Image (cartoon, rainbow, N blue to C red; front, top):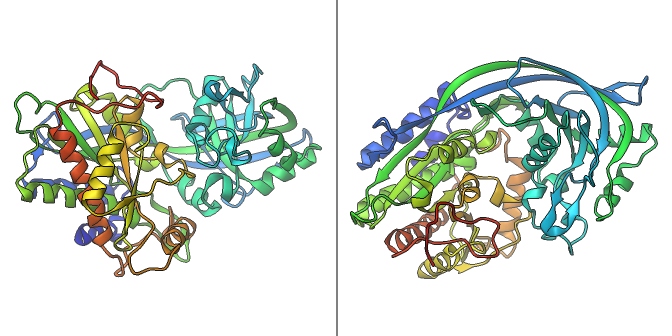
Length: 507
């Protein structure tokens, strides 16, 4: 696994952006490893490559806003980033800014930030995260729901006919710093190259200070508006701020690929069903330089997950185990652009989703050493939870499930499968490290999020340790084998927002 990670995170691969030389090197490397193991090519054309058509857009934006007659131009990268939401070479729009709080309509929480307000043609200024960030008695408290994700907010803005959306950044609400925003949204942005549903014209992030200054000019207080947004009686506020956005984008219609391989099931009656492993091979490519380094290597995110998946595949093959159901391995593309590779797969699955027993996702895997505990996103949502706990016990690991403060369940490749009804887990490292003082694991994770996540600093380190990664792989394999050999398919719990489609039955 060390060898896989070291190669995939090398500068030679230039950050593994989709449809680049480095990205193609990564995909071909993974396919070669699948072939060495003797896994079957799983794509419909008999290869290891499932095509994913993408349109890439490299944005060059300008943004001016303020009270009418007193515009102020923001500094790109320092005060804002913005990108086109439609595959157009030039977007030039302007509109009035309406503050919509968290931009959420959540009936199950008796919450509606819009209150029937017509926002067609408006630019929506909104907070990231959800109201539970301010009031732990509503939503899931500090554990982020899907309503807190920026992806949901842009989707809701589009459904309401808004012109555009601007997200107010704070490190606490976004759960990452402004450097992550700069690095993530200034490089080429990808979308699936297919007819899209209704969309807004543009989206962007603005710093807290930039939003505060613009609102103050209009006689409003961002802090006061933020407090009011945590109440159910909040109503949208016409700010009196007018914004003009000009975005020129370099467009590329390109082909990328998911890399797919299959270990056939041993039971003729069940081999047409599958347990799926996912790990995304892509990262951010080349972006804004930080301390002279412009290659966003993505060693932990997610060369580690691909290395772990290849380790799982090798262990499964060499063990001689032949589960009753098939096991499908998918190294996805364009996860960093919005889970596009997994979304493309779900739209055109190689194995029907109602025959897909479960998805086990590996993203940012433990490279810091052995732990006494382990976790997985989704264990409280489906019948996979008890299977995971039993698998962890077999490896002498304690399952410690922590609040999902960063909303990670909605941020990786298992999520499109979950939305489509397939029970899913995303394996998470433990925090109680063998030979380390209490709190060390949490401290290291916070340091990674602060200093390396989506930055050039996410590089291969000779100090990486793989006993913790091996623990995650062994637990994931135990889950996979248990599900692959079970008499019926797992189901979501009644309390979950996800349910199977296609009438599949199970416990």
